[in-house]
Image 1 (tube, one colour):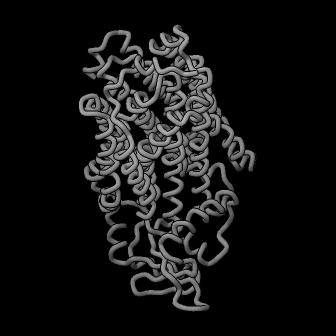
Image 2 (cartoon, one colour; image 1 turned 60 degrees about the vertical axis):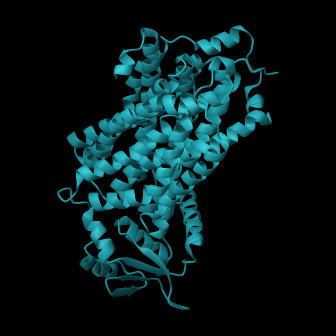
Image 3 (cartoon, helix red, strand yellow; image 1 turned 45 degrees about the vertical axis):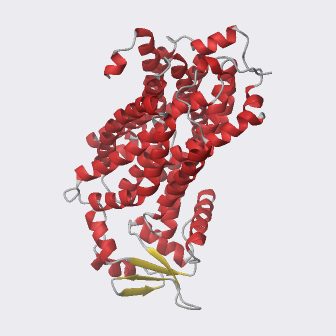
Length: 549
């Protein structure tokens, strides 16, 4: 905070106005993400808990799927019209589409129209967010003095984390003061309706801003690109930089960001059965610590460079995600960790075809259930749904021979076929807990491990805004940087909870979903280390002098 206080009034207004507006916008977007597990019961047909949960995660991903298209539309607008007015429009669209969710009837009220309308609102949210981040990051960077872009944009990088923090505080506070029945009946609407208030504050703040000096100067000199989309993606000199930025930085940054925050939250609440309020407070505490680390990583990148910090974060995430999440299990739900080691559950099925085939089958199964949610039909489906709904990890194994039925083995007992009562009887002695025992939880260790994940987030995310701004020419900066950022974050990162959870649901291994973010982070590490340049000393005004037809 001392760095911010030391700035002159103009720079403080730029950072605070851009940051606060973006905090509110991310708050809007993350309310749904935080309540995704809860939404499965509200907006989707009853009968298959696993399919409803995957459907809610898929709908969360819908907003991410259109973010690149929002990046193209609003990016082009930002390069033609200006930074200020473009990200003013995005926050209005975002705020209204979020607030309207608070007025939407549930599946029990209007049937299939409920998820249909929710999809439309999610699409509007995603399109708006596709144009928001690039505008805010560029606006701040183009105001920043040379040598302090990492520090200035570091404040923007904290907004996503602080937006999630605000969402957790509102939801966690509500769940702490009202009953679960009240929250299910009407309480879940309150965070969405608050968006009306946040929207008014955000618009008021942003109306006080002036256009970016770098853009205004370029526009006055007539150096703008006349066709930002063509110049960004059809000219190979810039198109190859877009591809390098995507596969060498933003894809890995996206999975580390969502893995360290959203997937960690899902893992605590859904897999480890930690009480929602306790999980929210633990995540929120780590986010407060992480906000400072984001600013610190941005400032450090001004001194030693953007690339070394980003690559180090990718490396650490790829190497340590498995042990960190296993440590979370031991700290948050020691009874579950003990049961998994003492009495592992094995489900023998004819669907076992090897590790790679299992991963492919998991994604196919998830896609089928999302498109056509249905009750489990085969014995394997019923057994898998039974175990997943009770939060019991299992390992898949091949059947013993031709004609054999699916079977469950635990602690020396084997049950052939699917029999719910027999499964319950076989699993009872194993001691798998129905929920985490808060008294036995090592909360300081959980917080420490969550903070480790946030440190990785800070390393990959803190410098990324300055890095992307410096990577592209001023004339097409909004368009060029927004697309790889939102593909990396929207597709690779945004679908991480769905992809990882789908793999876990299908295979039964609660750690198997981590191989997706590990693989993407490793890919970006290799591509980025070899192909991406260092950018910290580039002059943005010099980049405005690049001629465009």
